[in-house]
Amino acid sequence: MVRVYRNEDVRRIIAFIPKGHRHVRILLEFVDGAVVIQEATAAAIVRAYMNVVTHPFKRAVELVSQRVSGQKEGYAEYQLLETGRSEEEIFSQLESILEPNKS
Image (cartoon, rainbow, N blue to C red; front, top):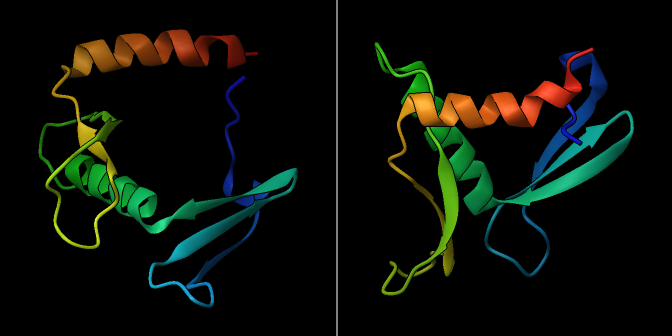
């Protein structure tokens, strides 16, 4: 099941660096639970968002987790990278994922 959270469903967001760590974590606290995402995930979300919102025509981008080698120092072994799938393919899959939530 896919959950869609509206702004009023978000209690708070906290960005923090845990003691003994170097990278940011983000706590997303919702009315029905909470999620903590790591910096690499937050950065990927920002990249995807900026890729769509600042492009004059682009309406969708898909990132998937891929294990990479030879990455720059400080980068995670697994990265969320663009797939290159067409917007039509992405929207088609989105319809099948989100359709059960329509009521």
